Structures are given as structure tokens and as C-alpha cells.
Amino acid sequence: MQERTIKEIYQRLLFHQGPSGWWPANSKVEILLGAILVQNTNWQNAARSLENLKVATDFTPKRLCQLSQGEIRDLIRPSGFYQNKSRGIKELLVFLDNWDFNYGKIADYYGENLRKVLLQLHGIGEETADVLLLYVFDQVVFVADTYARRLFANLGMNSQTYRQLANQIDLVEFTLTEAQDFHGQIDEFGKEWLRGKDRFGESFLADILLIGKKEDHE
Image 1: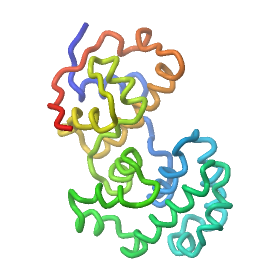
Image 2 (image 1 turned 120 degrees about the vertical axis):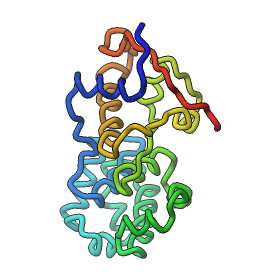
Image 3 (image 1 turned 90 degrees about the vertical axis):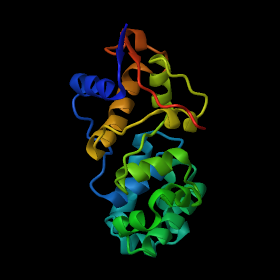
């Protein structure tokens, strides 16, 4: 077995898989909508809801904010859980509208407290909050989603919870672009090797163990 750092694991993923192009969206508004819509469903269903919102509003903040929660609910039915998700989208849109959708100002104002603020909004849990920090507010954070937990368990870092793994991963050597791509790389790897039956032992990472983890201060 070869011991490798987080950055070296990322580099191997990139070498074998190529750039992930993740998050798949053309604007930050589309990203934040997709981050809520993809909860508890697959991306195909979320994409159908996104297309409905695009047709209705062209993802223009003003037009999105003019939608009632009921109108949002009807447009996002393909993604399921539409009552909960429509409320979450409406609350997030109201929050952003209060800042004129100026993501930089929001990040500067709240600083390290931004994650806590996002978690107070309906329908935003830990994973969604980190996705928004990473792709909308341009902060280098690690998204410890299901595929990440499965991958790092195979690499010798077991974790019982989302927060436990996130606390152990240090992306200090990553640029924002690399951190964003890393999340995409992990998800692409997970779809190929970790979905259903765990086939990690057959993958190009099978000979690796992780070194250099942070202490867990959960």
C-alpha cells in the first residue's frame, strides 16, 4: 500500500478522470436552486425541476423572487419533496434578495458565521450549506457527502457522521477551483466504484492509504 496525502489523492483522481466540470450550472442562482432540488433524489429529477424554473424565470433573481411558494412548488414537482423544497427555496431567495444577490457582500459580512446563518434557513442541512459555501460563496470547504464518506472509509479514515469526516479533512493546500473540482471528482468516482456494491478494490485508488489527516474536534 502507498501512503498519500489528500492533495495527492485529488491529483490521482484528476489524472484518471479528467476535470469534473462540477457543479453543473451556468450561474450561481442555478447552483443554489440545484443544491436544494437534488436533495433526496437523483440529478435527472432535479434537472427537470431546474428546467421548469428556467422556462418560468430564466433564472433571473427578480423573477424568481416574484414567484409565490405555491408557484415554486408546482414547478419543482419532478424533484419530489416539493412542499419542503419550495419553502426552502423561497426562504433562501428572500434572504439573498435582502442582499441584492451580492454573494461577496454576504460572505464578507458574515465571515466564518455564514455557515451557521445558512443552516438556520429551512431545508438547508450540512451538506447543502457546504455546497453553497463552496460553489456560491467561493469558500474552500470540504463536502463530506455519502460518496466522500464511503471513499475515505476505504482510504483508512472511518467516520460515523458528516461532521466527523468534515472535521478531519484539511484542504489548506487547495485552491478554490481545486476544492470545487475535488467534490466533483469524488462524486464521479463514487458513481463508478461505490454505488451499490463497493468495487473500491478494483479501482485506481485501491493501493492507497491516506496520511496527514487533521485531528477530529467534533
